[in-house]
Amino acid sequence: MGDDKHIPLENLAAQIEQGVRDMQSGNMSKEGMERLQIKSRDLHERLTILRFKAFEAMVKVDEDVRFDKEDESQTNLIDSIAEVTAIEMPPKSKKKMGKKSLAESLQSHPLSSIGEGLTILDRANFTSTLFSNDTKNFNDMLDSVDACRHFEAAWDVFHKSINTMGTKPEIESAIEGFKMRITRRFQS
Image 1: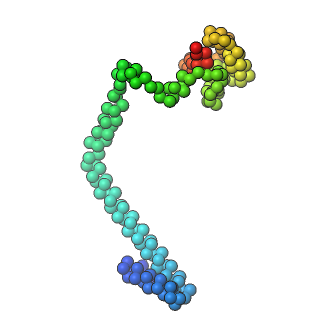
Image 2: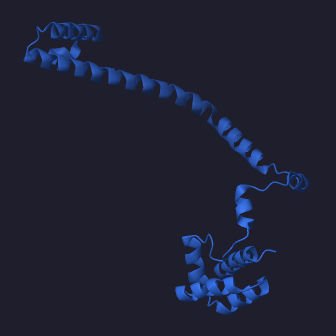
Image 3: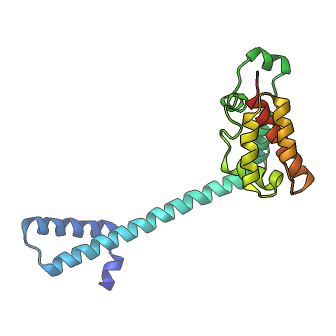
């Protein structure tokens, strides 16, 4: 079998072809079948190595080309992206379009309940930051705000209920976020 390693690919393929003919005619022994399988595996491994070497050679050529022009291409790509993102429509043309994105439309859609559509993350954020992790107080406040008839009463109920915990920016952000919810709940 050591000599089989140095058989040229054409000869190895011819031997496999002859083995397949012998197998189809029923003239192959168990040992012959094992030899055919070994030769087939050898052919597969050698072709895999050749494919890898060809791929490696292609990549090396690509790398040589890329190293010559890398700075130019990289700068142009980044500059192009910067130019595209820097372009902004004038405010007048935005108003003329008059269409909101789906996200903008959903964010301004009136709420039937103050707790409607609260994500788990929003609920956890409001409870921890505005109600010092007191879930019962948070849920009671939601019910009380829903019972109000107008924005001012709901805002008053909300402000009297909060017991903040966290940094000033976190608290301000949470209050602003909840104010938006109250505004959406009491749109006229």
